[in-house]
Amino acid sequence: MNHCSIENCTKPIKAKDLCAMHHQRLLRHGSPHTVRPRRVKEESECSWVNCQKKSITKGYCSKHYYIQRVSRRSQVNVT
Image 1 (cartoon, one colour):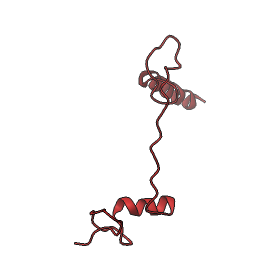
Image 2: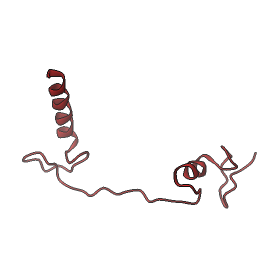
Image 3: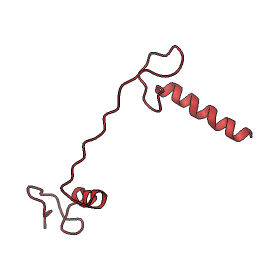
Image 4: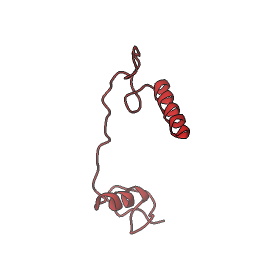
């Protein structure tokens, strides 16, 4: 079985003599050697009044994000 052409990579070939990971890097960044660090979110408190939980999505904790999402959906359906 053939292996990826990148040095020290022993994964099987997917396309263009590269494994799936290196092939995706080639498509996304133009080079299979490009490694971009993952973004780290800043921790903040929920934007809801009197809520001290950590925000998960769009400035709200999971409970209040769900409430925001559902209330927006019902407002859109009314008009």
